[in-house]
Amino acid sequence: MLTTATRPRPGGINPLHGLLLSGVFPLFLGAALSDYAYAVSYHVQWGTFASWLIAGALVFNGFALLCAVIGLFRTDRRGTGFLYFGLLVLTGVIGFLNALIHSRDAWAMMPTGLILSIIVAVLALVATLFGFSRRRTGGAL
Image (cartoon, rainbow, N blue to C red; front, side):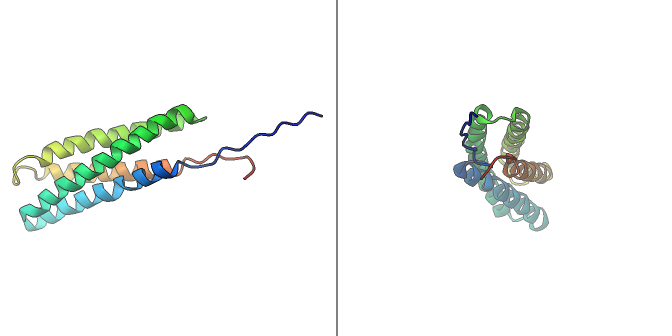
C-alpha cells in the first residue's frame, strides 16, 4: 500500500490581509456617519473629517486589493477569488469617486457625498464579510 503525506493548507486569509481588510469597512462607515452628521448639522468640519476617512479607507483598500491579487494566484477556488477581487475593485472605484465628490466645495458635496458614502460602506461590508468567509473545507487540522 502506498501512502502519501499531504499537508493541509490553512483556511482563511493571511493575517496581514485580514488586518488590511478589517480597516476598510470601519473607515468607510465612519465617513458615511460623518457625512450624515454634516447633513444634519452643516458644520464644515464633518465634511473634512469624512474626506480624511475616505482617504484612509482607500489606502487600506488598495493594500487589501494587492493581497487579493496575490491570493488569486494561490487559491484553488478561483471563482470566489475573482468575486472577492471584483468587490474590492468596485469598492475602490466608487470610493475614489466619493473622494472626488468630497473634494468639492463644502456645500456642493451634499447629497451626492452622503449617498456614495452609504453605497461604499455597504460594498465594503459585503467585501469584508466575503473576504473573511473564504475558508477551505475538508482536510485534517
